[in-house]
Length: 82
Image: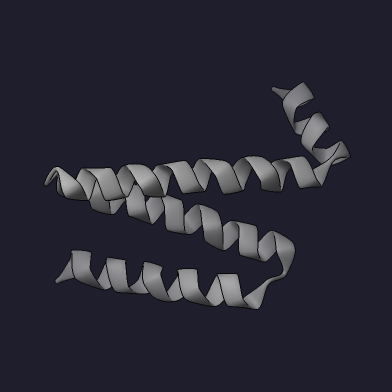
C-alpha cells in the first residue's frame, strides 16, 4: 500500500487522473441505477461520484468545479433527509 501512495506522491497528476475517472464511472453507474429504478443505490452512487469530483476540484483549486459539486451534493443530501 505504501508503494501506491509513494507513486501518487511522486506524480500528483496521476492521482487526479485516477480520481476523475473513478468518480465519472461511479456517476455513470448512478445514472444506470436511476434508469433501472435501483433506489437508493443510485443516490449513494451519485453521492460518491459528486464527492470524488469535489475533491478533484479541491486538488486543482478550481472553484467552479467545487461549487457545482458542493451544490449538487447539498441538494442530494437534502433530498435524502426529506
